[in-house]
Amino acid sequence: MRGIKKMDNWREGLTRDDLFDALNELFYRDLESWFDSSIFYCDSCVEDFIKKWPGIYSWDEDFQRNSIQLDVFYEGSRLGEFFSKEEFIDLFKDIKCPNCGGRVSGNIWPYDMSFDVPDNFEEYIDEIAILADETPFLLLSHPFAKEVYNEIKALSKTITTSKLSRPLFRARVYKKGTIYNEGDFLSPNKKDIKEGRYNHAGRKVLYLAEDEPTCYFEMRAPKEGIMLAKVKIPEHLKILDLLDKGLEGNSIIQAIKLSSLLSSPDEGEGWYKPHYVFTRFVADVAKSVGFEAIRYPSVRLNQGNNTVVLDYEKIKDKTKIIDFIYVTEDKINSNTINLWRQN
Image (cartoon, rainbow, N blue to C red; front, top):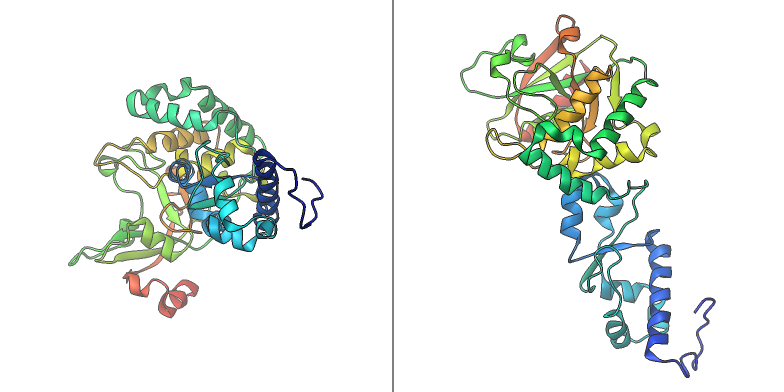
């Protein structure tokens, strides 16, 4: 149907299969023109896609706003010039979702990845999840984990030290009656440190947010508020910056950053945190090849960014707690906070 022109007798002699081919070509042509996308996800598979790619769901505005009902797509496309709505509904029953192969109805989510997803990556996600749950110390036995190790090792050879953005922010959940001091915002004693996204139990690191709202929501937005500290780290560090625009074409880094391997908002219960196994693996790899910090996107607040300092011993004596204040959610974006930040 290439170069089709609207004529009253255009369908003369065409079979149903011919009409389907015509609709299929027009549909994908308009999908590409409207959404700059050659594929889509359907109602049946979009939840699984979001589960495997939470970073895309959280941070990519194109994905967030691209959901469209099929009847709305029909009304806004050129399909109405060639097919009645009844014909569209009838013929579209034979179009299969390009992602899951299922029947399409209701809504579609047009979306193309901005990078080349490694072959078999979604299968790797499932395999690594099983490893993380059953035998976490054998993670490096997985071929994709080895690829991640080699990629981070190669990156380490190309990156020099730099300063962290400033100021940075760190917080504690507010406890009424507690008198806070600067030491409360440094790393706790080893015996008090639980497993975190990028640290093992007992491993001293320093988690920092790049802005006040991110810091508040990383603390799970406690109703009782937080004590929010403004932090300065003058030391130069070798940083694995997962947000570096220079890495946007790096399929390994983009895949782990945007997928559930690093960006799952799920944590587990109590000490059971299987979603942290791969993130801690990345931290171990980064530290072993010379990185002293990792910069990564927040899973708690869209557009928020964090840094974890892995080499706490290097910065502990030079870290400065500039100031700290009590903050609740209604004040986190207030002029008071903005003025406090600038001082």
